[in-house]
Length: 247
Image (cartoon, rainbow, N blue to C red; front, side):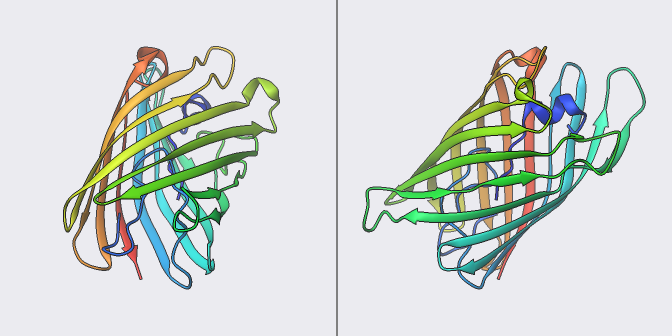
């Protein structure tokens, strides 16, 4: 799953891990190259958001992932966006539905890293109040390396918008996690996004995340990040929380 909280989404008004194998990606903004296990499901019920320029915006929804074939994951995300502007009434509505497919092209057991492509299509928002009214596509590549209780993953790509080149941007991120206990994983992430439009500066954030396994099928995920570049105008702070069902 991809759970990017971008300044692009905020400007438009829109803005948990199983025991084996380990799941990377959520709750971090950087994704990972590990697809959902073949013929298995990962379903996230999530809430995410950020504060920017005095506005508080984000989304709650469902992120559905299915292992359609070995090394192939199909994803659909259905978000309901919310926006609490500093000046004006609150807004709610169906935001940008996301459709994606992750394919792992290299394995670290035969290569140095796991490597995957994960193209993602953002459909036009179903609301005039939240989300982006233009379709866009994100074209990233993600890599991962595991050793013992440690894991490092990240990568990046660019998002191309139907609204024109002035709204295109690129994002890059890297995460390091450690399995602290059999049911608890902690991690730290550095994430950067280039400017996505006139008046929307580039932003860099530093975040921490946690995953806790209640059992083999139910997992809790949490993440909090603080902007360290253009924080006041682009990303004062952001968060992500989810319950993950795996089966």
